[in-house]
Every structure is written in C-alpha cells, then in structure tokens.
Image 1 (cartoon, rainbow, N blue to C red):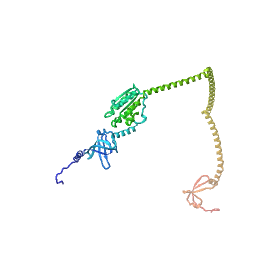
Image 2: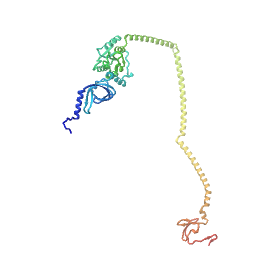
Image 3: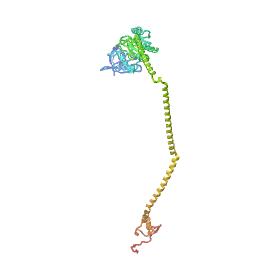
Image 4: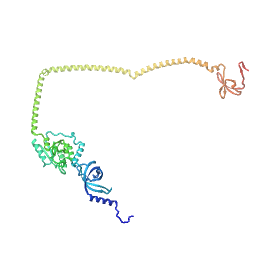
Length: 453
C-alpha cells in the first residue's frame, strides 16, 4: 500500500504533458531523412515515415502545406523538412508536423521539372507525330507574352523588318510570378479561338524560378491541345522549358521565333520572281512541244485523207459485224445441239420409261427365280430319295412291321430285353408295327433255343 499521498496521472494527462514538453522544449526543427510508407488520405493530408540508418519518426503534412510543394514526394526520396515535434495523443506516438519540405541535394524546382517531364512524356504530349507544320505565309500572328518585356520589342522589330504590314495580335500576360501560368493559358486559348495562323509564346531569359510559368502542367497541356501551330521561345538558347517539348516548333530565343514564323520579304520576292521565270520557261517549252506535235499531225495521213480513214473504219466495222453474226450462228447451232441432247436424255430419264424398264427387269428376274427354284428343289429331292431309303431300312418301325414288338416296364418305362427283368403282375407297354397295347404279366417261362419248355 502507498504510505504517503502521491499524484496519479491518467494516460491522457501523461500524454498531454509529454506533448507539451516536446512542443515547448524541442519545438520546430530541421530534419533530414528518407521518405517511406508515403500515403495520401482522401482528405488530402499526407502520412509517412522519415528514417535514416538507425531510427525513424512518423511525419504528417497537411493539405494546405502539401499543395504548395513544387515537386511530388515519393518513397525513397531523401528530403529536408522543417516542422514541429509533437505527439499524436490517440496512439501516444510522437511525430513531426511538417511545414516545409525540399529534396536533399536537388532543388525542388529541378526535381518537379524532371518529374513532370517524365509524366507528360509518358502520356505522349511530346511525341513527334502530334507536331503541326508552320504555315508558309501567315496573315495573322498571335503572341502571348509580357507587353513590357524586351522579348515583345525584339519580336516586333524582326517581324516589321522581314515582312511589314502583318496582322499581329498580342495577348498581354504575366510571364512569371503567381497567376502567370493561368494568364498564359487564357492567352493561348483565346488566340486559338480567334483563328490566328500561328502563335508565339515566350519571354526573355532568367532563372529557373523566373521561367517556371512555362513549366506548369496547365500551360504544357494548353500548348498540346491548341489547334493553332505554336512556337515556344522561352529564355535563351540553353534554356529548355516543358512548353518547348509540347510546342510544334521550339525557337532558341523570341527573335529566332519571329524569324521562323515569317520569311524575309526580299527573299520571298526573289523566290517568286525565280518561280515566275521558271514558269515562263516551262510554258515556252510546253508550247514548243505542242507546236511540234501539231506540225507532225498536220503532215500525217489522217489530216491529208480523212475520208479514207473513215472508209477503212467502216470496212472494219462491216467485217466485225459479219464475224459477230457468224459467231452468233455457230453459238445458236451449238445451243440447239445441246438442247436436242438434253431432250433425248430427258426422254430416257423420264419416270415412265424408267418404270417400264424396271418392270421388264422384274419379269426377267421372276422367271429366273422360278426356274432356279425348281432346279434347286429337284436337286434336293434327288439327294433325299436314297437317304429316305436308307432311313426306312434302318428304322425300328420297319422291323416291328415284320411281326416284332417292343416292351417297356411300367411305371419306370424301362425297355425290357430279358424275361428275367419282369415279375408276375408287372405292367408292360407293348409297341407293335402299328399301335401300342398295355398288358399284365401272369407267368414267366424260360425259352431255350428250341422253344418254350
């Protein structure tokens, strides 16, 4: 028993005390470790484990903080996190509630860039078969960029120098910072609906953070889904944005994009003049060939004696007509011959003729059957007569008919061969050549070879 009064805590009180100590004594810390068991609940909160070689700690990152990450956390990724050490009272487990997370050894933006690039490439957004060709001479050019940047001035200078009086539509949009991606998407979709011939999106150079709006997934998908051919010109030649891979053409700089979209006016004029000269030479050549063919045809037999050609054609037509008539006559005769053969075959194969022939064959077979049956019966009778004679000679009835009789002792019906087998008063059945008789033995006598004694 307790000898003095002590304070007894409940589990909840102890857990809250530990939680308070951890939050006040340890508080917010920076921790590095490897992500494992990453799970995202339907509420949008993420639960996972941070571990190193010897230890691990549970981690939780709520939806509001998670949505601000530039990259996608995944199992096996080493990260540096900043958060408050606390206790989850329901289970009594200590954990770190994370406020900030960044990949270890690789910038968050660079990691997000690589992750999104792999995802979109796997979906086919960068496939070459989806690329659309640029128009040769666009009449309406759409540009989505900042109206105050150096990029728009460079592009307008190039377009004006190479081909003046073009219809250019500029959709002003922020190209960096919060909301820039949404404005770029609206610009792409608006110009696409307005039916421009070609579109340029881009901006001047800058850091990865400055160019990040063109790496946003919504921008890349808007570029891919547009029906208008798009040239992506983001940053300098060494800069590659994800919109460059989804666009139909990638230009190293905004000025280069302007040079790609229109050809120089003087070069086009020279090419048109060259084509005109080539067309004129080709036309003269065709006319010369046509005149030569006409001279040859005018000197041909057809033009000199056209009536003779018609007469020859008429004669050929008559010959063909006669050959056709002869062929038709031969064909008709052959059809008549085949018809006669078929008619004769039909008569032979008619049911009435077949029935008459069957009746004649049946009568012949009946006569052959009767004649053959009589012959068989006579041969059988000839073989049966000597057998009947032998049977009659050997038959006991024939012997009995000569005055003999057979006796059977009754009721056993045993054949009696000796008189000694009988006793007085025995009943016997006698069989004669014709008929039978019953008798009773009264006396027995011995018979010698000379008669009864």
